[in-house]
Length: 296
Image (cartoon, rainbow, N blue to C red; front, side):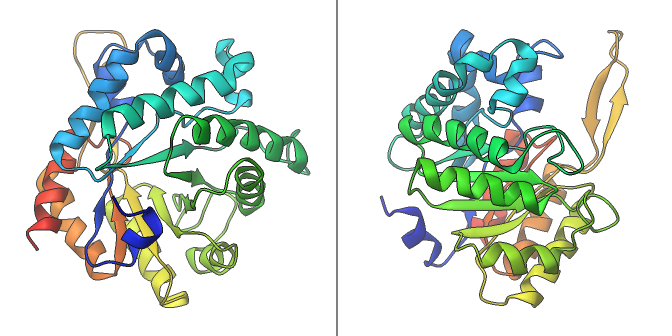
């Protein structure tokens, strides 16, 4: 198996997996429970999640660690198990992926604003990301993916923290879900100008409100730095509450697998090298993406 950097120089698009939380909730994860808890308490559900995406055609799977910093885990009483949880998640993904599918160690935001707007210092955030990345690297991840970021300052803390922990390739995707900007007001062109200067393996956009908005963000990034290696992992549209007779109902997303497959080709035409789905994306969406990209 080629390493990731070599693979990104070759023709074609790596198909990434879809949603984690969406699928784990369907598998019975109680609402409000940290998904990361299941890395220790229900590992079979995590293996089945990864296997479903690999069977659908994914070349890349993400570890179940989006909320894997101690700031997020402490909400569920797990702050003392950061390294153990992230190691376990990476091992579960690695064991399921074998040597034919890449494992990205997934890192999301700490869930609170950094100073001066919030309570967490840059150094505290960097230490939290270092702790998480250490566990992911020890568990066998091929790369670190820092995703759904809205604050460039927090991205820098995450990149620095990851580099203190490991020499694995690092990818960053930001979410442009606020009128084409991140929640902190950063435009896609401004983001890539900063991110690409950090020496990352790839940069891009994930989550977001709609496929078209994420596509626009990628277009702006491509125009700003034509040589950049890009990744996109958009949501399956917007969620709607579907009544199931149960309290709260079920969230249903409005983008079908067919539409996701059609958009995958549009992203591919912009030279995106890694493409998958975020919230609301199922193995059926990833199967449609894989069929569209690998038969294109």
